Amino acid sequence: MSIQSRFSQKDLDRIKAAVHTAEEKISGEIVPVFVEKSGFYSIAIYRGFLLLAGLSFLAIIIFDRYIPSLAIYDPLLIFLSVTLAGLIGSLATNYIDPLKRLLMNQKHLDQATRKRAENAFLQEEVFATRHRTGIMIFVSFFEREVIIMADRGISKVVEQKEWDKMVRGITENIRMGKVAEGIEAAILRSGEILLEKGFLKTVDDVNELRDDLRMES
Image 1: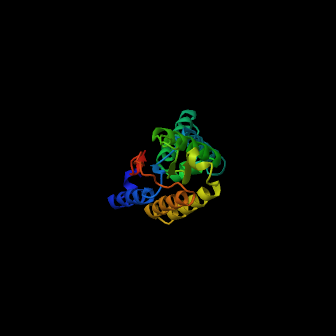
Image 2: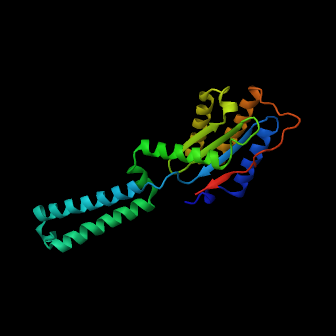
Image 3: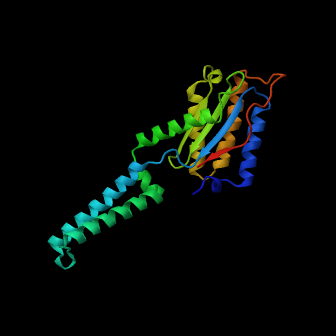
C-alpha cells in the first residue's frame, strides 16, 4: 500500500486544520510525518529465500524416504527445485509485508524506525525554530511504530511520559483504523501541553514551519 492511499483529502485537511488550531495560541511548531516503511530489510528477503529453499530440500528428503513415487534423484533437478523455491520465498517476502515483518526481529525494526525518525527530524528542519520549540509526530506504518520528538526547548520542560501517553493513543487509533483521528488528537494534545508549560504565542510570532502532513515512501 502506498502512503498516499492511506489518506483521503478530507483526512489531510483535517490534520492540517488540527495543526493550525494547536499552534494558534502557542509558540511551538508541530510537524506530522508519515512514512510507509522505515527500512529496506534486505535481510528478511535473504531469510525468505533460505526458509523456502530449506523447506524444499527437506520435502525432497521426506519424499525420498517415505513417498518414493514423488522423489527426485537427479542432482540438477534437485538444485533447480531448491533454487526455484528459494526465489519464490524471496519474492514472497519482498511483496508480502506480514511475512517480511515475521522474518525480522523487533530490535531491527526499532532501530530502523528510530534512525528514519531522526533523519526526518533533520530533513524537515523541525529544529529550525527561533526558540527550538518544534515537535515531530512520526508514524511508520510497516513497523507499526510511532515516535514523538521534541526539540530541546520543549524536551527540557515536558516529561517523556507525556509523549509516551500520546504514542499509545495514536497506536491504538491506528489499530482501529482511525489514523486521522489519532493524529488529530495527538496534535491538539501537543498544543495543550505547550500551553500548560507556558509556551505562549508572542506578538512577533510567525509560522516557521508549514502546517500540512509530510508523507514519504
